[in-house]
Length: 243
Ligand SMILES: C[S@@+](CC[C@H](N)C(=O)[O-])C[C@H]1O[C@@H](n2cnc3c(N)ncnc32)[C@H](O)[C@@H]1O
Image (cartoon, rainbow, N blue to C red):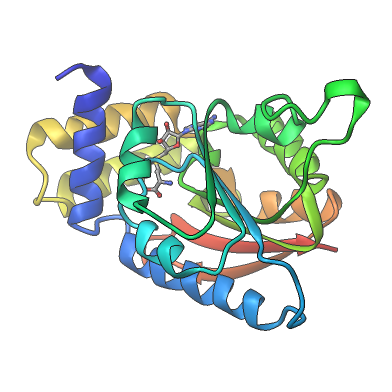
């Protein structure tokens, strides 16, 4: 196995043992999207959904298969996961698009041809991202929030699942406590798998401070609502709509 495959197979083990509460996340995501769909006018067109950092869709596929979508776009910077996602989703009644690229570039309209001839990038009705945006540094998260706001259609819904720091907690303190959580509370993983997750966490994870990011999002024109909180003061789901 190459580096990515080893890291991915360790992440798969995390998901299978529900160590980051992916099952509760999937239920909370379904509840948020179902409530938004139920509140739409009966004659609204079938919504388009963009999924940033879609991964292999191992958990989201059952929900996506039953949603009455008009189109689904799965975007990920790792090209290798896209065929896995396509296979997990299977045959659906709506159009699907698979994009290899960076989620910040998508928000800016650099990926899907929206800037041609000065045209505004296409908007989306539902934006979803799970456990991907925390890879951006804090200024890039802010740029993302500002740019993504412009890519939402009126009344659109942004479901943001991620890991977050406690208000005022430093990244070092977060990494230390999450590392301890893995070493002491994840016996389902082998030592090697634990090391993969810990080295990824140390190298790439920059979770937002939950209070600061909610304030920054509101300043960028979003209404912010915490829709689900995990049991470890890290995993959480926020639902955002244009203010
Ligand atoms: C932890 S996985 C989560 C996958 C899936 N959303 C889930 O909840 O199981 C993070 C995914 O985001 C992708 N990713 C990370 N940073 C990204 C970026 N800047 N742009 C696009 N994809 C990114 C990774 O390649 C990976 O597939």
